[in-house]
Image (cartoon, rainbow, N blue to C red):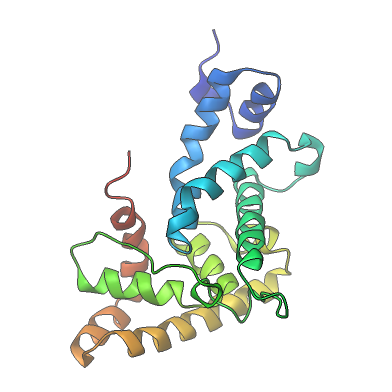
Amino acid sequence: MVDPESLDDRALLAAWQRGDRELGNQLFRRHIRSVSRFFRTKIPDHAEDLTQSTFLALAELDPARLGEVPFRAYLFGIARNQLLMHLRTKTRADRRFDPLTWSAPDAGASPVRVAVAHQQQRALATALQRLPVDYQVALELHYFEGLAVAEIADVLGRPAGTIKSLLSRGRDLLRDRLAELAGSDELLASIAGELERWMRALPDAIHGDDT
């Protein structure tokens, strides 16, 4: 019997599409936390439904479309498409949701809910959600998921040079949002002084109550 842990994501997807539910569940378990977190930090009220729709879209994917794109980059690309479709349905008919200028709350998303012990993490989670969506996506994929610039480029469908600019500009915007939210110079300094450490610690805090 094949050990599911020994199979890569593409092999698990192919087996799932052939009807092997056990291996499909293995693929689901391997990525559910990351995909769920992707939505919880942006549209918490709809995270569960959009996580399910992302995996359903993955199950219907023609494997040939993966090409040379890393599996996780393709998966997050599907998640981003699901997110944008949802946000565009919430936007007024006379306006088009622009992920480079609009945040999720601009389209009516409820505030992100983070059960964490540190004020720094609460402020950071809120500030991230208030960034334009593609800046938020780029920063979270970089810090939370450890994706390389080339992989984030695959997710967003933009050149690698553009992604570097998004990350740089995104950090600047994040500091601006933090300055608006921190409430005290001391709290702001404690976050800004160790921004990378707080960013890399935030995913575990967000999912501290998940299985």
